[in-house]
Image (cartoon, rainbow, N blue to C red):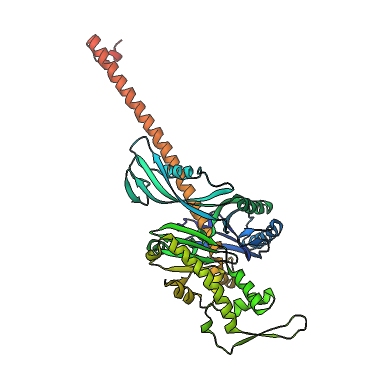
Length: 452
């Protein structure tokens, strides 16, 4: 479900996304626009120095980075940021499948409130100590033994069953993120698993229906989400990302970390055979020492070895999900790591599955608030999660509106039913009284009432 068309986009509520990543902290400010788009009003980015592999390792540094990013976003958008939608990832994330059952009193139609009751019951599941449920995602529904129903609302039935994909995380890590946001004088609207947010920005409904794997390669983790028939089927977080590639280059080429990062970004390649043997990079020495020459092909060998390991982990998750043969739309790679040259070819070689890069520009509307250079930068795969958090915020807002409308309609229906029932009782009593008077006097009630 993508953002709907707003009648007056100027009146649309402002939504803020906060992506707390391992390499960067990004704050995006936007609102829903026409033609199923998101209008960006401002973007703030700061270096992340307190997060390790998607988990907060230093609260003070993380808070400082969040405040820097918020300050930049506020100055660009002229919006006072108070409430944010926050992305969450990390090795502690787990997922399980569970089934819920709801038995209604009557054979009336299934409402949104019934579905929310089923979801609410899932949050009561007993998990291992120290874990907390982040998301409860409905899959297929079964109504009175009729399986495979995706949209149960409006259908008649008494016994409603549903399969759920439940995502949980470690309470300590979740609380540390909440503490960072609280200490930054912000309030969390809701937490969103980062691959779910990224999927909204780079995948369309057709791909999700056909079967697709989203692979979000970030700085500290690689997030995997598998969709089939429009439903999320499997999620996983692999504790390897772009930063470990940088560390490999640092060790293998004996250079400084910032030099290793520049080598990866400017000259890095995921396939060594695509580089020339005689191509060499000259790296300045430290404090007057002689410059160092590094072979581009050797650099690519270092990168390829680590990327192969990451892709093997992804391929293992695909095979263990049971959907390997159902991925018609293939693999979509996004995140900062997706910018590595020849990565698509390496993924296709290892997995044998079609692959493409996912760019979050499909749902971005033109805006006068950002300059052309800033808008082009936001179309990079590294901002997929940030843009996705805005889209998830719009969806959440629309779901709340739909629920409130349904509750009001249901209450109105109840009042109407009570009034009709009361009128029925009153008319029945009037008829009974009329018959009694007629039998007793031989005169009908109209004549009796009009008699002096």
